[in-house]
Length: 119
Length: 111
Image (cartoon, rainbow over all chains, first blue to last red; front, side, top):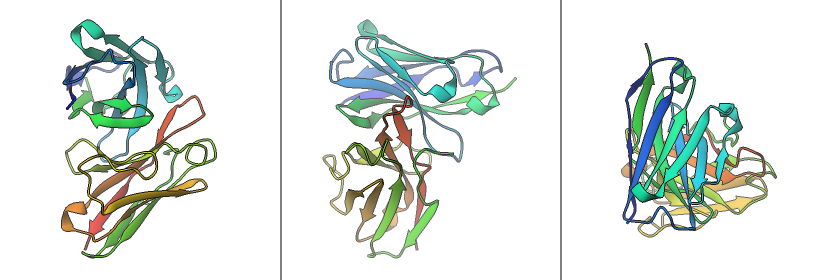
């Protein structure tokens, strides 16, 4: 059974860059049938899709993030990462990494990582 | 404002059935049979309970079922139990540049 685990700083200063990594175990990140996604959830609010990456490096992003998001993959480490630049308090949220199976959005989820943007 | 519209809350008594709607457009829910539903308990990650409109992953109770009519998808939970009290979200692929959209979530209260 695939497992995903987010890691990264829990506190980021405004205007800086948020960086998170998702480590995948129990399944190959290089498999050509999955997308690897990032989703976030502000406290008390709903889910927001950030973007996804394919094993080849092909990406899609939510336009609402206005090009601040970058997702990359390191197949040698079974990891994929999120960088979100120029953060503000509005970016404070629990960030989840997830695996999309075939055309199923977020079939498997990490446990989530709380990131707070504050000086 | 979420791209897909869900009621903020629904409630039901143990043993009853409830239905949660998820309304989109012909560009998302109405245009694809790739609607998924998730259950999220407080402080936990969401869990996939329905995919491709009406399919259940292995291990998900048959009390959960999904359907779609036009631009609206629905999640029905039959034989309500206390442990069903949770937040529920829908998602869909979309032909817009957003690619994936979520509903705003519905809080289910078991009375």
